[in-house]
Image (cartoon, rainbow, N blue to C red):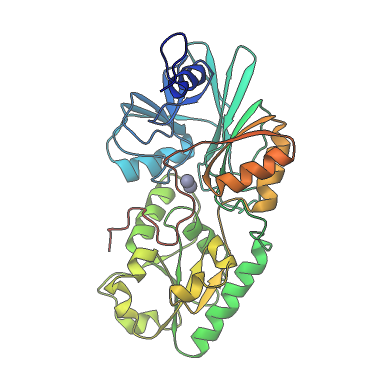
Length: 356
Ligand SMILES: [Zn+2]
Ligand SMILES: [Zn+2]
């Protein structure tokens, strides 16, 4: 193997070069050596700054956590007794001369982009984000920087979202139709983010909205921290199936894949996911309908968000990273793919869903 004059392989030399930058990828997460802080680490570290409460970004086993005030109850609910410090959006925190500031990412309640500044150099770690305001997550704020780290879950031109109001209209219409036929409507959604979006935006005058336990537990944590969520009823085992008639149930995908749905007897199944944009994804899961609703940026939003940062250097992570970074290079950006342990939107989500 070829080595340089210090006896390092080219890979080691490159990693050494990277380590000297304000942020680097050290195999445990996104690392700021100057502050000795990791952002969204996927392996245990001493100090973790967390963009949002999804399980691929907020993992168990860190010495301490810093997240937005709105994320504190979510992290406590998901991680149990851990050391957490809450910070307000826009409030600067100094660690060994490095300034960390959290800005709304518009992805889920409490989600943030983390701006890291040191000696005139500024990076933004965006975590997951979307630009359209869902009315419940704090709305995305563009943040100027030199280097921007972006996801690329839906980084293909085929992914373009219709206005969300149209999606809610379609959901309401589908629900009423099922109700008229005496069927229960079940929609699968992430327990943090999409579930609350659907709860807040569907027409509660149509009927009762029920939730799977994992979603109800998240709702409880959010309500306790002051989020004004509309009423939902926990779909417990002791409810008679007749009580569900004409109702709408929001469940996690793993619940639907289990025996849990048996109690509803006659139901129709809908999936709310950005992946529903592509034909075949719904049929493969034997759903009756797909609703194209995502908490991630679509193709246009990704491009728009990147332009708004005015960054010249872009790191592209989870998703269609190769294709999307190639597209950015063609637009004149210094774009590179970086491997992380983050997941994009999952059809069969791995979020904790063990609650009945
Ligand atoms: Zn997420
Ligand atoms: Zn993610």
